[in-house]
Image 1 (cartoon, rainbow, N blue to C red):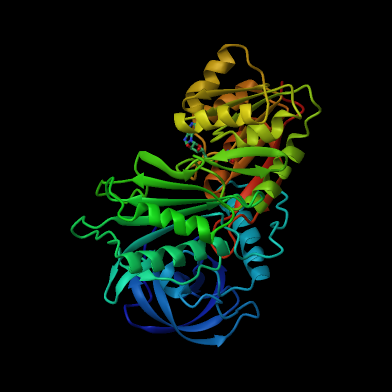
Image 2 (image 1 turned 60 degrees about the vertical axis):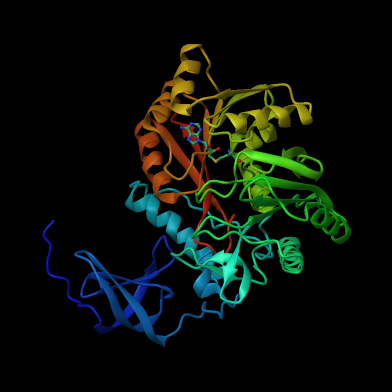
Length: 461
Ligand code: SAH
């Protein structure tokens, strides 16, 4: 590819019409054929923008003035939207966000997967896209005016104080406010990252959206927690739905929020939540989907795509705590789940027992190692579900799917670009992509989840 000199230079002001949206949510336009990314810009807008960065193949520019505004532009409801970085799309009306996400998925399939004919259905959004998260992890520290608790300012480790987060459930705002009041009153020292002193590092809340059960986790920089009993008493008085108060000790200098040592200060070790008619026990460190309402929407899509009649063998690869496996188990003959984190498999087994489900079998290991082994043992699933992390599936796993020749493969993905890459590989192995159904699990962020149905080509034996 021949490279020409970029047609813009640093600090230059340009007029630009934005034609698309990048995967990080920036508006994108072409200036004399050269890609320019504009944070806060919306496809369809014309802006006056000042160039802030020039690279050989693209530039970044900051909006100076909007010359033609998108009808989808709204004032972000959150006052700290610009500083926080947790949400990227609050300046876009929710309908506009959904349209953007459908387009993003389609673009990736066409550009990376060369899949032009595939049916991409409109994103399934939320009726009320606020206050959906069931888990909050709020750092505590010292600011100029004393105690602060909120979020790390984008790209830094400075904690900005926050009163309320519009994508978190109200309970978690209330817990954080309560802890702040108590900590101030009793003088419990917050953690100071720069010299690794102080006590309280994070407050983590988990809420069972369908059961209302509440867990509060206090992450401390060592085993000591002054005024422990008083803290617990105030929580119990304040939150009738409280089920569990945990102290988690993390004395390491690390960005990882929780340490390995969890102690139950009051109540149960876990809370329970349900997805459909399956109950899940959630411990302080176990992974659980953060938007329970949309998780159910997604899993119903998986069930629909799997089209189970009751006699099937199903493989659930990258199964986590067995959520999809258990959701499908009552509709199939048996489900085999595989996951690399052994703690997650322990949770999966416990959750199977909790629900009295016996036709599931869980294995610890890399899916790309365990699946070929299952194949060698003669396992021939009728349906394979994969739900890999952002980097997508290992090619050995995709080759094993091709060997196993399931009737249906359901690919659940949180990253449209690796999804497109992997669908191309499966298409080349003789599978047809029937449809792609995106689901909005994380409103106001750029993330989008997809449920894809692939079928074995008829000619393929
Ligand atoms: N299906 C689950 C979790 C999906 S998240 C749910 O819906 O809740 C992806 C999971 O893949 C994580 O639990 C991660 O630990 C696991 N994982 C990552 N790499 C893996 C690999 N190579 N083999 C198996 N599991 C893996």
